[in-house]
Image (cartoon, rainbow, N blue to C red):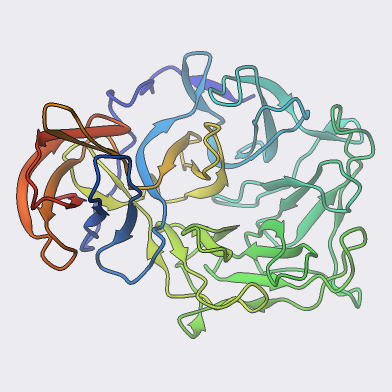
Length: 420
């Protein structure tokens, strides 16, 4: 039975965070630019200084452990999480595959949509018995995904198998509020051949090619990601042979044990690929179209650490991810399972100026979305190209929101906020 680990207690951001492994990677300086000629609220756009991406990709704040009854949630070993409203009460629940039992635990949310509180509700069952998907040797915990697989408006369960790379479907034969799962059946291709990615299957079911019919996207043990096109329908899926996704014109390979999810990470209207592996968590931007995605090379997702540095996300050597709006702010957050059975939550945000005001006594106030641990500089100027005058450095983060106040100078009509 999954337990709460008594020795791991980072309950607030001010406490020790899960260790992020430093990597030899030049971090991107985050920049936000604002221009106004009137003392009123203005709109800001955030960009990454080392790329030509606009609008901005999401940024991540430092991680927190998910908690169970005031202590760190710990399912055993090799946590593989997915988030879904299992009982359709409007609150996000947590489903986790784990070893060595090779079962899938359910944690119901007894809190709210914006402040989840988890309670252990047993292991998921099918046919009256705990679901068990044997993982073989090593780190092969069952890899769950929850969603409507057959278009009947209730939640089904897909589980990736480690030893043979197959995907098992457990249909919900009951209702949304009280799911009852039938015994599992392994998915097959249209011609009856087994559907497999080799080893360590990690499925998700989502529309990849813009035809309004969900497809099967599945990570593999060798770090590649497969696309199985649904040539059937939303109610009766039928899969063509799998194709490995390409990125930057080459076969995408993330090292080992890829876990893919689909999300518009940069808010440009196109679905991107976010994937974890044993080496990190990566964003592959879609610079193609809705119906013909074309992926850029993987870019590591990063987060701040206590020293003020921004480093690639790396919480353990067997990371398994999901994306879900954990805090109810309509942005997808990173949920990351770890080797030792714990699960981290990285809150996402868009680095942007949210307010510019000028007070009656001539003070300019700039406020922006921020992250703990970071320090900021303010750069001003009379135009975009001349916005080079550094007027403040070493501004300590105010947490999720930071402000700077200074006497108004007429030449300061453009404001740029950046991390030093």
